Length: 110
Length: 112
View: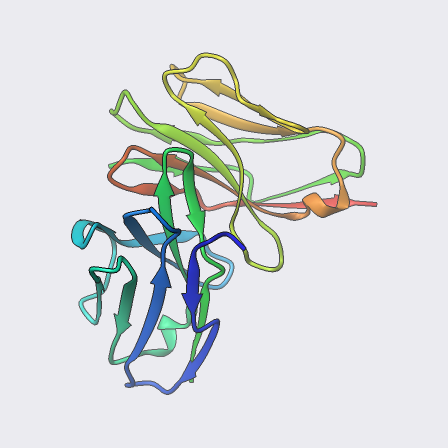
């Protein structure tokens, strides 16, 4: 257990739907990073939050949004889902030693 | 923009042998960190080794070591005494504080 918790582990939904992915960083970590990994691809940075504020945005689609709450957990909202959004979505938190990843949420859009 | 390149999409090595995975990066930053992550078939991202750019000494973690050449912007990973459990995707990553950029990965297969 890395200490970074992601739920759900698996999600299957239909095109056009909306889903919410949840991430809780390790205790004491203020940052949350979201990444998307499509099949056999590298990790694409989506967005970074630090202590509730958006710090950096990567190649995140307008259909996607995120927020970080006062208790530091974060949610990634994906709407108007398309088949191409099927991927593994990771979140990570960061401390001085580096980044620790959650186990990911596997999203399948059918 | 910061970029990370891994020129070897796939590699294989015999068990107990040594293998080196290549990584180059491009940045204008002077202070940054470099990492190697391993992603086994379970898809979990596991930190292998970390290097601070201001440290000239190459990082070592048991059977894993790096060759960090800052001027050349090169950061290779050497795995000694390869084990079957080392079979995984290996990602080189660059961290300059604002973002964490990954390379495309090298798929390593350790053969018995």
